[in-house]
Length: 116
Figure 1: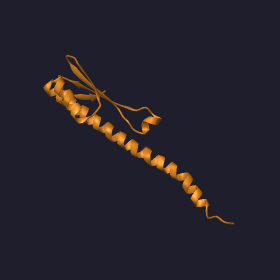
Figure 2: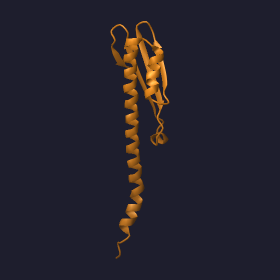
Figure 3: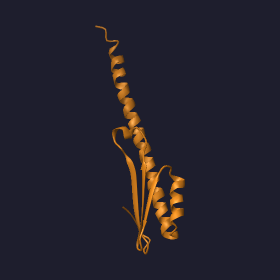
Figure 4: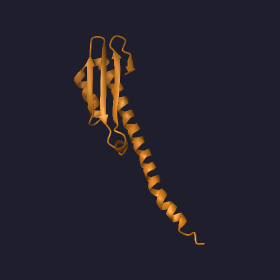
């Protein structure tokens, strides 16, 4: 019996599956990096806002570090809430529509920050 072509057939069948898994892992890694970047910049922005109370400079701080982002700042007498959202464009979005949403709430009196 001649078994020379069996390994080649299995390799040709499994190669696209390995390629898809590899691409999915890289895309999830890039999504994780982008989410961490948004999280860190939002936290820095709310710290800055609690110290300076300057809405325009806070928005510019976020926009300078993250591209294509939507920013919403709600300011009341006792607290401030900064919400950012960003559409992540990647292969993962074909399967699952993913939007990065980060919200932080800061108390103006105590200068404490909590994640919303």
